[in-house]
Length: 142
Image (cartoon, rainbow, N blue to C red; front, side, top):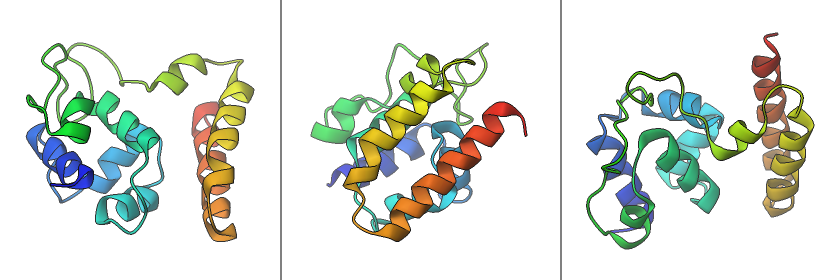
C-alpha cells in the first residue's frame, strides 16, 4: 500500500468519502481544489507538506501514512468529517496559526520560499500564485 493509498484510507476512516472529498480537503488545508484533486488522483506527487496539512486537519496519524502503523486516527483528537475539533472552530495548520492578522507577509514568504522552487513548470508556479492570491483575499475578507 502506498502513502497515497493510506492517506485515502485515512480520510475514509474519519468520514471523508470520495464524493465531495476534494472540496472539503481543500477548504480545511488551504490547498486549491484542483491541486487536491491532482494529488489524490496521483497526477501530482504527494508532498510531506500536503500530508502534514491533511493529517493536522483531520487527525490522521502521520505514522499511518508513512509506515502503515495503526491506529489510523489520532486517538487524542476528536475531529469530525468537517475537520473541526469537538467544540472548536476550524482546525488551523501550523502555518496558519503563525500567520495571525498582521503577519500575512510571513506566511507569503514561507509558502513562496518552500514551494515555488520545487515546481517544475511555469503553469504549476502560476497555479500556486493564484492559490496564494485567493487565500489572501479570503483571509482579508474580500
